[in-house]
Length: 120
Image 1 (cartoon, rainbow, N blue to C red):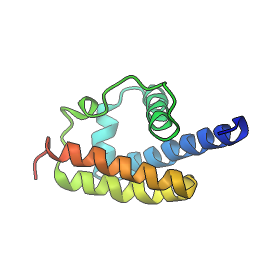
Image 2: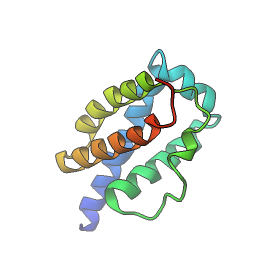
Image 3: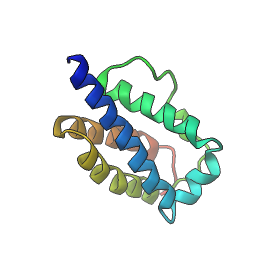
Image 4: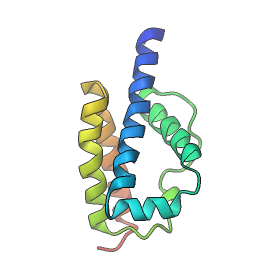
């Protein structure tokens, strides 16, 4: 990927993260969970940009564990469904089609793993 295309893809990833978490924070159920759990949204947003850049563009900026960061959150299975209901359209609106498809598949994979940790 050339520099111009990479920079455009990075901007799309940043838009995905910004718009998705705007939706999360405004959501009646998920907003209360995430707003209580995240003490510094600027830091969280940087981490999420790094995570999605690593997943979608192969950068080496994310060094955390996406699963363990969700331990302790009072999530139930329907919250994960809502997460995907918010994520899918955001990905389709902000990313090029190939990246949107990959992002949605990754989000579905993460939520599938989280389902093993949450109540029904």
